[in-house]
Length: 261
Image (spheres, one colour):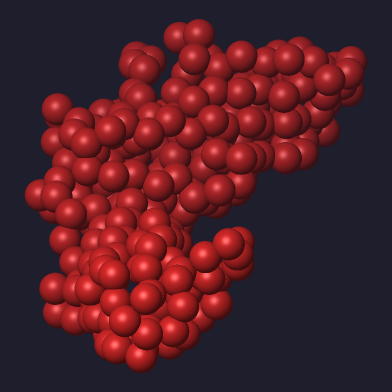
């Protein structure tokens, strides 16, 4: 039974279905026959797959393989995160297309979909991790190659960052209070929650300039809130900047202009 499974971040029931398929299970050993090779695998253009709380996210996968007889198909492309996170697409269902680069080499592409609101069930924040990308490629002479981890890629929790500098306007030499909040998607309840105890840079860009300069680094509190003060000196934009972590991408707040009089 070959059922197209496009949804990632699913419950245990989906994993049991995937295991029943047989050769597609994550536990299957790498194998192959003949001289067929997987030359390159790229997921999402080499960037992490960043998922929020409501919108399904698509990630293109490209598998380049070679064989003396030419490549017939990439049978499936499977993504496996910490159990039971799973996503899969099938050649037989028309979800993978192969284009010849030469008589011996082809690149097969398909799209994995990561949906935080999957109707069949949802895991938790453990899905923000390094995933394995498995695939099975067949040649025209029946050679084949199977890899459980032809490459790896990251799935991350979408992040948000705000800033507010006040008062506006302000007299030169007076105190400006800069507040904000760092938050990220939670797949436990499909809401955004503060990202606690994270280092965040306060940056300033003088009006008319295109370059931000870091003024100081502070940490988010137990609710993800940010607060610090600076002395007003000249017109410009304040923003917070977060460098990101392995589970959460970098993000910059939009600059907040302060008029210094």
